[in-house]
Length: 385
Image: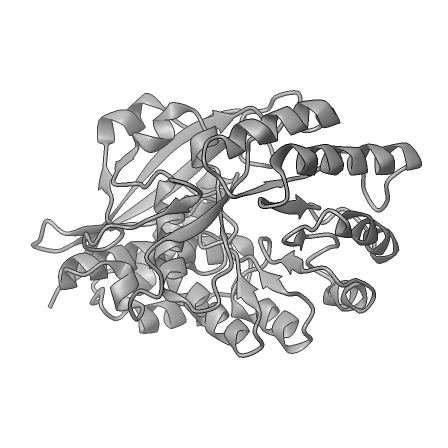
């Protein structure tokens, strides 16, 4: 029997013009073997607390176990935690779970998507995020959007509402936001998908007003127009809008997603694999959503490890919509941290058939880019925007 034996961590960073990121990678080793699995437990801040939680869970629920028993390990780690459902504990479980799936794939000599049930698509559609200045002028955002489409993308997401507008927009900001969307749509044409980000800023009344405004620009979906915590707000919003509503990046485990699905409170779900429970839990969320014809568009500000783990899920599930992709808008080291991470081509990514996640660690590159010490709530270096 393969036996989980040892735990290590790697921490590293990258940035783009709107944000900086620290990433935390747990590594699980097998006893008497060279095999190991890598995960992603990136919380966007508080890495020390995540590390402590991972160490605690590892010693109590993972060490000495068979890595092929990932389902029972997940359940024991989750159900025996007084913090279950909280972001710290669930992020720790997420990172360890992804590492187990990577290790499982290497033991069985299969890519993860095969272990999930096989491939339903050869390529995975991605949308660009991290490309735009926020806040930017309509002209600037349009120029940036046109440049991104020139890179091959068929879909882009941006927040046109500025960074300091909560609950509602002033009249000036409302029309400025509309002009940003209008100019971006004009720049990219009608054949490109535009996704509108709300960052959970608005109350229901103003979200309805904004949804009506953006409808004419044919968005693929309106992301987090209202708080994800109050599902009744999502239910009310759905009553008065007829564009697709997306939510879920700040929700953890299947349980809140189950309530959204049951109440038909969103059209698109956006779990984050590094926070919501790892591959084990995202597969369950996807299955639950499929029963109500709700699609999955995973949130992704992950390291290459979390991002490629989501790609394996997206290759497998029938209700996949589209996946977030920041990679080309980070500093160049993003593609050097791990060999095997796919670049998009014509708005799609493809996976190899290598075992597990299909990545190899570049230790030298990771050592060159230690985590930012002075971090903000978003997990990056403090900077003025």
